[in-house]
Image 1 (cartoon, rainbow, N blue to C red):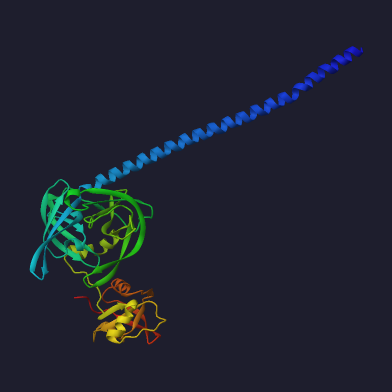
Image 2: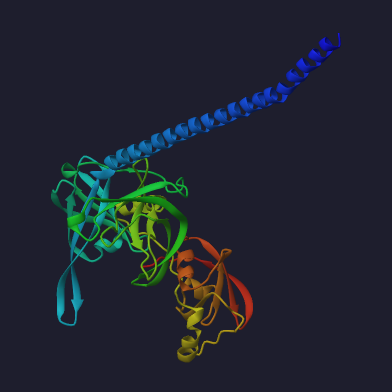
Length: 381
């Protein structure tokens, strides 16, 4: 009897001995299963993600190629012959740029380019992508917007570009340009990038002095000869006109274009040959940092607490500014609530208004702030 009890105890001890091993095996199998599931899920997810990236990249490339095809044949190379006066007499000079056909009717095709591309031109020659050359005539041009409209025979037109909306464009949007960097040899060159900035204020030098232009900033490469070319979105719509490139030591991939919405606001007047009317107030203005020169030559003294603004250095008798009570030495610091940093800001804000408008001016006179209203009754002649 005792032997049976001892045998049973031995058997139970043997069974109990294997329980930890069984439990360990169960837990091991569980964790191994979890690890395999996790790794499988990660691999599947990675494969799926890689497939999505590949599909997205392929789609973007396809969209870009289709967009380029859509606008490519509307782009042109523009060559200009102009007369330039010098000490030795009159010389013929040549210039070039880019443009694009944006409109066509039964008789004519119309091309947009920059004003500075055709300024002073006596002869304008347009070359299409297929190599066909035709003579173009100037329809209308505006120095401040830096836009010009050319006209060619409608029968020569290959294609017409579609105009989009610059206001609907967003930061990071894919964009591309088409133009003729460095001349005819490279006409039809395409560069791509993203929209880097909107509503940028770019200072340019005009015949009448420095001026501010509102521009779109891009990182697509542009060079001399790209001026006047099309800036397009991924749909192949023109959203801007390439106008200039910021150049300087250590500066790269900063290009600028005139928003197409700005172009649309004046295009009907340019097509009809009308001059864009901008208000004339009868003053000459200078920057605060030129106060020493003004004091030396004109005895104009500016208070040390005046840090910004446009100084009136000359005022024409009987003109709108004179009638509003402004005087030589006044420092204009605000126009209709907009801060005036310098003379360029003064012109930019003034030219946003139309003849017939009234504007409120805040200015310093002898270190005291004052205010007046100018009636814009005259236009620049």
